Length: 395
View 1 (cartoon, rainbow, N blue to C red):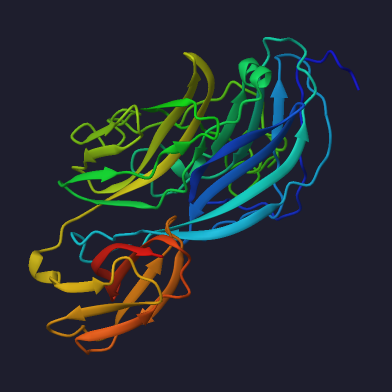
View 2 (view 1 turned 30 degrees about the horizontal axis):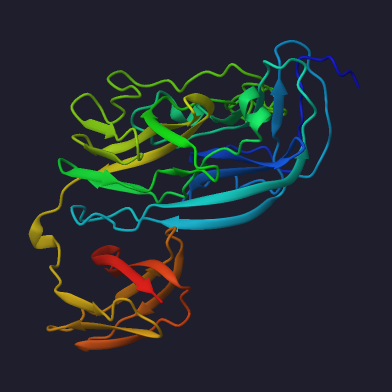
């Protein structure tokens, strides 16, 4: 194996049918430095739970590049997923008479000890890259979104290598649904850094990768750069998604809508004036002593839903106590619960923990000893409509 090559390529093989993974919803790659040029790599990919496209691959193709000339195979390893979970919309908007019940599914892939040799030049970065097609075909702001795939990558800069830096890790954010014409705030798109480096946030363009080539409608090599599963993922530089007219990275909800991000904490706020599904990109940049160490992109979907009349929405007046709780909670209402109402309990990341049918009594006792200590969320739903939601702290 040559040591002076300018490209270093690491890729992993999988066995699966070539299908469009329609309804992909982005992803992100994190790395943790273990010392002695060893790194733990984590890839998280999101897709719509209701997708009828290809499921997650049990093994994925990941490429690692450095330099800008020759390409060669570096090694072969197994890169299997270690977790597949669903995350649900925490508070389906009561403005919508027929809420979509949107849900994301994510797969977490992990490689625990990857040793990187010194790059050919001290000015070279490493690029970890994953590519797959295709995005949600109902995306309002993207051009031919069903033919646009995703490129998820992270860069290990020379400064990161020299200081054994670990990248920031994006929080597992819940699906986002907001009401037409009403202000909203999204607080869970932040990234955390174990090195306590400074992180700044900005709206940015998501990257595109792969395409529909290799399917019955688009014959060709599915492992090519325009294929459903580029194998290996193609080298940088990477192209951005193509927006429909009237949309861009700063106005992804349309020119009549607003979307802003707090550069210090990543909190997104805005007002949607158009119904639809909108792809949005957030970049997190990591700095230490003013030096840029890494940049990560998290793209996600905001759904803006139409309004229902207030007469279509039940107005509850229920109390949930004690707060915090230990072994059980009580739910009390003066008028009794509507028939077929359900209490849903979620963990701090929005994963559904349990569901409990509610009867028509004014006070009900629900066991809570199955919950782990910490923050949880609850919803009271009837026929897909959220009647009440809130937070629950378990001791």
